[in-house]
Image (cartoon, rainbow, N blue to C red; front, top):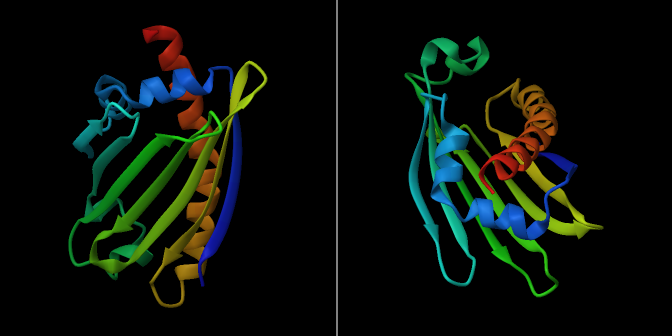
Length: 166
């Protein structure tokens, strides 16, 4: 059964600053720096402010939890697609999709970046689905809890990156 999540994060950076960072390829390369398992496969940003990023994360069989490794014959890949675009209200809407190789699971999130005074707020709502018998719901819970930490951490990283790169 899919597990839903809602995560709210705050940033001292403005909506415009965060969206401008997302529209820079060097931001994404810096964000992945030090993660030898992840590659930036595609990046595009158009004149209308629409940003699309494709990332692959390669997870070696030896680092997978044993419960997952039993269902995966080799290494696992997570295919990650993220899009962002300005909306009519002055905010930025995004979507994040992650799918695991072999059809073992996926996640999808709707992201809304809006002004909060002179700063901004990111609201992410979505679902995690793991298609592994008997343990899927436990893994969905674990992944959702991980997202509750990683989404705010990524926004903190972005805020710091903006301060360092203007």
